[in-house]
Image (cartoon, rainbow, N blue to C red; front, side, top):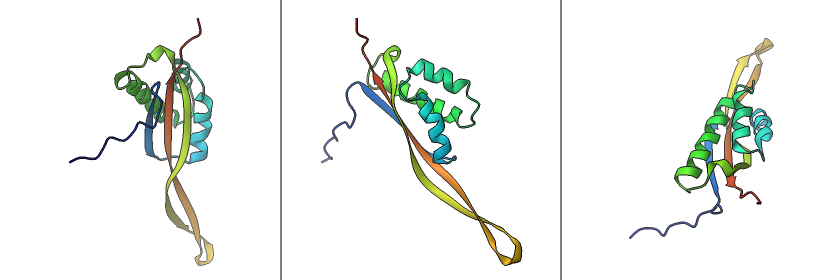
Amino acid sequence: MSKKARKRSLADNEARCVTCSIRVSPRKLNDVAASIRGMKVDKALAELTFSRRRIAGTIKKTLESAIANAENNHDLDINQLIVAEAHVGKNLVMKRWTPRARGRVGHIHKFFSQLTIVVREVKEAA
């Protein structure tokens, strides 16, 4: 006896990839993710390749994984893919402290983020 298969949450022309525990704040990650939303995947990869932000490499890896999922798992044409969604969520926060004057303490928060990229196959109108 096994559990019944769960219905697929995405449409048939979509694929996604999720990366958890990225060591960057969600605000910084969302700046780069916003720059690729709605782009064709080849332009988005070029944008991330030449971006000067440190986190662009991690976003590029996630996007490449979403493209591979679309091609291998869902038989989608990679030349027709666009970045349909790129949303960022909060993850855990490591709380550290540093000593300050007069016996006080300075709080340091180290934020982690979660990135979800959904790619969608769009048929060109002939």
